[in-house]
Length: 59
Figure 1 (cartoon, one colour):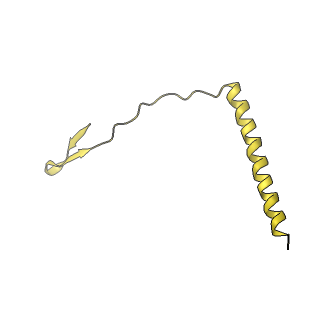
Figure 2 (cartoon, rainbow, N blue to C red):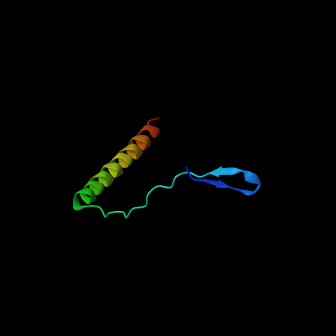
Figure 3 (cartoon, helix red, strand yellow):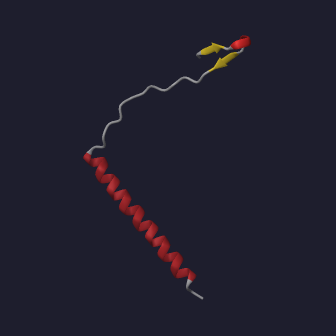
C-alpha cells in the first residue's frame, strides 16, 4: 500500500491504481450481437408501451 506522510506526521493511504490498457474494437460477431440485442430491447420497450396503453384505455 502506498503511504505518504503529510504535514504534522499524518499518514495518508491511497488506493492502488488499476493497470491501464488499450481497448480493442468489437469483432464482427460482437457487432452482430449488439444489433440483435438492440432490436430485442426496442421490441420489448415497444410491447411494454403497447400493453400500458391498452390497459389504460380499458375503462
